[in-house]
Length: 422
Image (cartoon, rainbow, N blue to C red; front, side, top):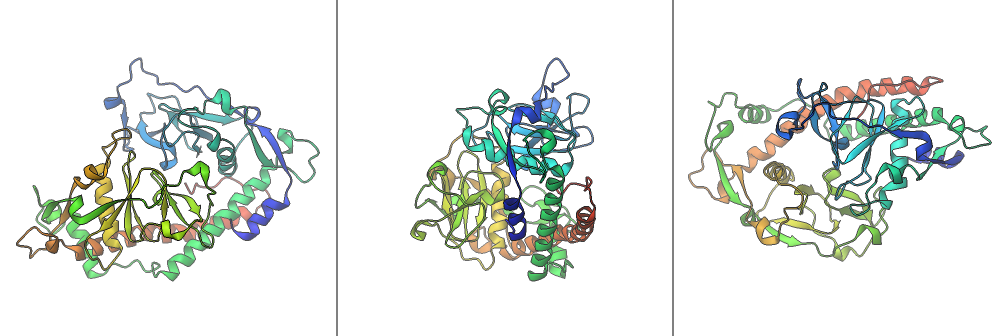
C-alpha cells in the first residue's frame, strides 16, 4: 500500500456491516429451455457472443465464457462471488458492465446506488472477509456469505453504523487517488525501462511481418507464418524438478507486497504470474530464478525472474540450454500455455508425463537439421520485443489520458464515475 493512502485508511473510522444488509443476490437465468454448451457460449467475445458470463474462474475478472445477450438475463453494477471452485471458491470480482451468470458463481446487487469506484472499493473488503472462510469443501453460498461481516469507512460525523453513515465519498476519492498513484508508477516504469519509445526496429518490424504472415509467402504444414517449426519434447529442453519445499497457504504468513527478505509464493493461480503473495523463510528452500513454474492440475506456466517458494503441485522447469535473454523463456512459456489450454483441472500430471509434452519452436532459416542448435532463439527474442512495444504503445497513450481524467475526479467535490481501468 502506498504510504499516504495507507495513512488515510488508518485515520478514518470504520464500522462493521452484514453483507446481506447491503446486497441482495440476483437470480439471473438462461432464457432458453435447453442449454447447449457447444452452441450457446463462446470462449471468445464476438458481436454474437457479446455478454460476459461469470462462473468458477480464477482470474480474468471471473469471466471465462461469453453468451448471447438475448439468451441470458443480465445486470450491471454488481459484484461477482464464486461459490464453487477448486481454487476460485470465494473469489470476488467487480462487474460494473452488463454481465450474466453461467454456473458456480452468482452476482450480488447493492441495495444502494453504486458507482464504479464504490464497487472497486467494496470488492477487496468482501474478499478479505470471506476468502479464507470458504473452500471447495465449504461452498461460498449466499445463504452463508450474506451473514459475514465486512469493515467499511464511516463518515467523520457518524454516531451509528447504518447505511447512511457509510462514507461513500471517501471510497470514491480513495480509488481515484489510488489509480493516479498506480498510473504515476507506470509512467516512471516506462521511462526507466526505455519503453516510452515504442518505435520498432527493422528487425522487430520484420519479425512481426513474418509472424503475421506478411511478405513470407504464407506457410502451411510445419511452416506456419512462413517459418519452419519443429516439435520438441519438453524433457529434452528442461529438467522437470520438484519444488525444494512445499508451503501450505493456511500455515504461513503471506504478505500482499514484497518486503525485505521475502520471496514470491507461487501457487496454481492463472493470473499475476502465479504469485499469491510473498513469504519469508530460509532462502535455501527457494527455487532458482530464470526458470518456469508449471502448475499441475491447472496447467499454467509462468517465467519466474527471481528465486521463489511454491505451494503444492507446482513443478520447476529448469532450462537445459543457455539463453541470452529472459524473453526466450517468455516465448516458450506462451507456447506451452497455448498447447496446455485445452487441458482442464482434474486430469493430473506427473514429472514423467510433463517431460513427455511436445511443443513446437521455430528453426533458423539456414537450419539443415532439427536439433536444439537449429532453434531460432534470435527470432523468438526479437518477436517478444516487438510485441512488448506494440502492447506498450497503447498503454503509453492510455496512461496520459487516464491520468488527466483521474485528476479531474480527485479535484471534484463529489467524484463521478469514469471509464473503467478494468
